[in-house]
Image 1: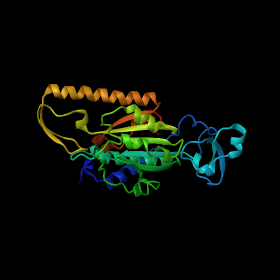
Image 2 (image 1 turned 60 degrees about the vertical axis):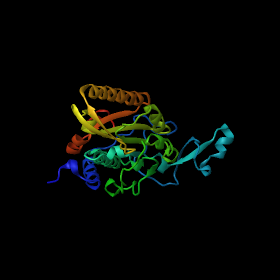
Image 3 (image 1 turned 180 degrees about the horizontal axis):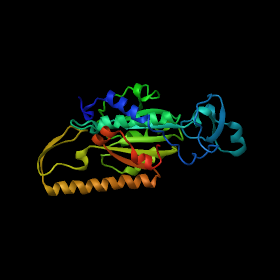
Image 4 (image 1 turned 180 degrees about the vertical axis):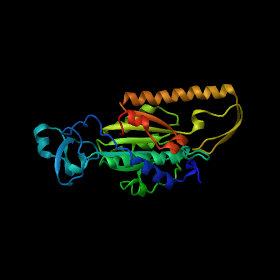
Length: 292
């Protein structure tokens, strides 16, 4: 019998979707600014049904501008229709090579987590779209369908998704929930990524997927290090001093992400890939009120 940690992408999608049937995504506690009612709508409606106004943002369709409201208030606003105020989720997958290292199950776990959360969104009558972020951030074919029908390409990005995430935010639906799934293992300031994800969103959830060796590197001995993005390789002797230095830097890196998420009022959870694939549970997100 094939071990679940060796499953391919298609099987990971199916397993995540099946596990997601147990969960339901919980809407943000507070409505995004500019919406009426006690909570976001939970059923799709006619695209011609006017619901509300919100402030104009660059990239909005100029045909949606309410010029009469502009004449009264001297402020640009656009008309919102029912389909735009129904709950919506943007699921963003880190498509860089660091997620698909040989011998690691991070890519399977990331896909399974995305499928689980996509199904949880569907259970709550949220619409959703899946994005892959590497050199560019692009919507995945069939990503608005059920997770089992997503066509997810190979994770081949040779750059971190940090730079690409900011560019498509204008194409993502305003006031949507955003779920970012990544190992987060790249140098740089997490605050820049979190601010880009948070812009015009209702909330941001960060799901970190790590391999066991990311957390607990091997003991003393000769080790071959390969940069997954550049392909550069170096042979080193990893002694206890170097191992402890890595662990301390890893802890500081984790703290930077946790601080950035806290500053942006976002939720962060960390999953170990092999353990998640064996159990397909997200108890931490349940405890934090993201899913139920």
